[in-house]
Length: 407
Image (cartoon, rainbow, N blue to C red; front, side, top):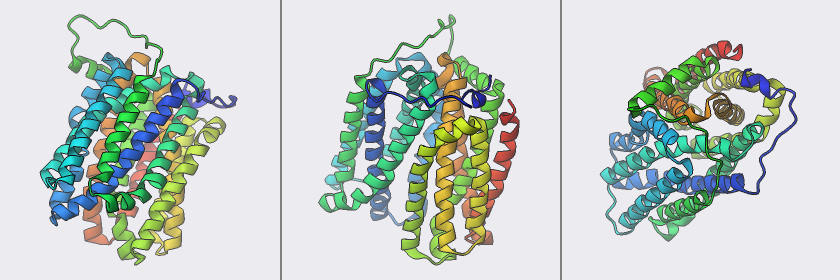
């Protein structure tokens, strides 16, 4: 039975805060808080080290490339190893790396190559951590509560990143240029301790075939993803959407400050509206899924987001852009919660890491491509055209979802 239909008419199921889920939620939120401090502070540090836009862009690229190189491998490892142990070990290593970087910043030894190396190393480790986290959650909550659990984790992370960490960065920078990175390192240590304390049920794994290689296991995960009609369509749609998102995000500041002439205040209002909408979407994702079914929820989100992008690119009014971005963020969270839950519901437990890795790797590949396309569109046809380009891509994504809905 399709997971999209499994939740229709079901009574609400919620994960218990006591025990494993509460600790995993806290670890995820604390870690996102630290990450948000770091990611907000890094661009401010980068512009003090170089004025070359190409070098600054390379720092961003280093945060994407590891997913393309190691994403599939990280998924295969997540299915082989103890996921809890992998997660806390990765967080300990990340804490050491960020702490060392904080020392370099504090002593005046930061450099653009060091920023690139840090971004590359942290994202490389994330390919194992993120896939292990996706595979671990079903062992901590009942299957009927997965949607609610995903919504709570993503909403908590959004609040921690957008509304707690971001406003704190300027305060920390008045203390020291190294302070955001020091706090991030502490957040990794706390998250590692919380994850290490978990006692999840051991996943049921079939014995590996003699001579099985990581390459063969990666290929098995790709075949399993392709064989599931719903997940295949969802993966294709998410990849196309991420191309559009890359185009939008890379040029949104130009659209608002240039085409709309709304200045930095207008940009801040738009970003805040997107964050607030995302939090609301986390609260609504499960009620909508129970009413419509998960795949129909994702399809509805794509349709409405298409209209939001069209409004952003065609209506020259800040109020319309702010409202559209709030609604866009809301439906984006509805999409993300239900997509993650569909993966956990439909993928075999022993292959969840590999299948989610294949999904993530393909989806992440779309963002840098979209950023390049958005920049070219803005330069050639106007600062508002990337949003219109993204709208057209979302139309294609919705078309890819229609067969998945019928599965």
